[in-house]
Image 1 (cartoon, rainbow, N blue to C red):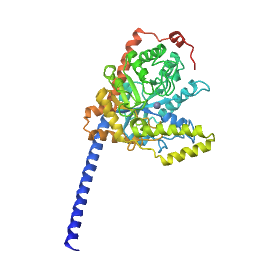
Image 2 (cartoon, rainbow, N blue to C red):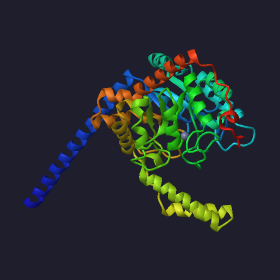
Image 3 (cartoon, protein in one colour):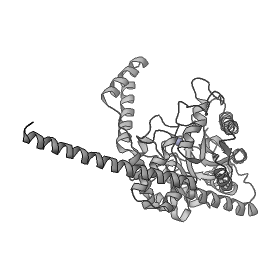
Image 4 (cartoon, protein in one colour):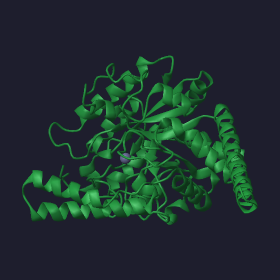
Length: 428
Ligand SMILES: [Zn+2]
C-alpha cells in the first residue's frame, strides 16, 4: 500500500468514524426526547379527539358489526388495538359515532343507534383496558386506574334529524360532542365541503348550539364552513372544539381552520385538536388529491364503461405517485395553532381508522409519543406539552359542564322546531 493510499484510507476511516458518532449522537438525542415524552405522558392523560374504530368495525369485510370478531386483543388490520393504544400511551379517546350524511333508506336514527351500540359494546368488552367516560372527572379517574377513558363523539348533525328531542336522547346515550355537520350541508348548517345554503347557521342551528350548551355537549366545528364556525362562536356560551382539523394558513384545504377563527379561540376557551389526515396537513397531498379527483371526473365523462374507467384511473395513478405527509408537517400545524390561538387552545385529533393513508412517522395509535418527542426537540416546555396532550380539552370539557349546570337552573329543555324558527319546510 503506498503512502498516498494509506492517507486516503486513514482519512476515510476518520470521516466514517465522525459520521458514526454524529449519527449516534442524534440517535441518542432522539432516544432522550422519546424517553422524556414517555415520562410526560405517564403523568398527564393524552386525549385524542377522533378515532373511527366503531365505523371500521361496522364496515369490516370479514364480519361487519361483529365486535367479538374484531378482536382488539390481537393486532387488527386497522390503526387501533389494545396493545398499540398502550404503546401510544393513549389516556382518553373520543370514539367517533359517525354516520354518513348520504344515507337515505330508513332515516339516520337506526344507523346512529347501531353505532352507539357498537361503540358501547367495544367499551364493555374490555373492562380491564377501557372505561366509559361521561365527564372530565371520569377521564381523570380512568387515567389513574390505567384504563383508556372512552368518550363518545357524534359526527354529523344530520343524525338529530332536525329534532332537539333526538339531540337530548343521544346525550343520554353518552354523546359528549356533536360535530355540527359532516360533509353534507344540513337544513340548518353549512358544511365545509358542500354548497352554501344558509351562510352559516339558521336560527334553528343557533338553537341547536344553545341546547348543546344547556346539555353540556361540546360543539364540534370540524367539517363546518367558516361562516358556520363564526356563527357558532357568536352564539355559544361554552368552549367549542375542532375534533379533527388542521391550520388553513399552512394547508389551504376547506376542512381546515382559518387564522381569523383561530384568533377567536382565546376568548371562547376552545381547542383545535390537530388532525393527522394527510391532505389536511400536506399541501402536496392536498394538491395530488384535487388533481386525482379532476382526473377521475374527466375519465368518467370520457368513457362510460366502469371497468375501463377504473383501468384508466389506475394507469394515471401509476404515473402520478401519491406524495406522503410527514410527522414533521403535523408538528408544524400544531405549532401554527399554538402561535395564532395560543398554547391553551391546541390539542390532538388523529382520525385514525377514518383515513386510508397516514403521515410517515404516525402510522397508528402507537406513535403518539414520537410526535411529542419531535415537539420536545423543537423546544416545547413540559407545561405546553401537557396542555396539548389533554389539559386543554379537560379544561374545555369542565367549562362546558359548568355552563350546563348554570343554564339548567334557568332554562327548560328547548321544544322549538325548525318550522317555528326557520319558517321553512325541511327538505330532507
Ligand atoms: Zn371526519
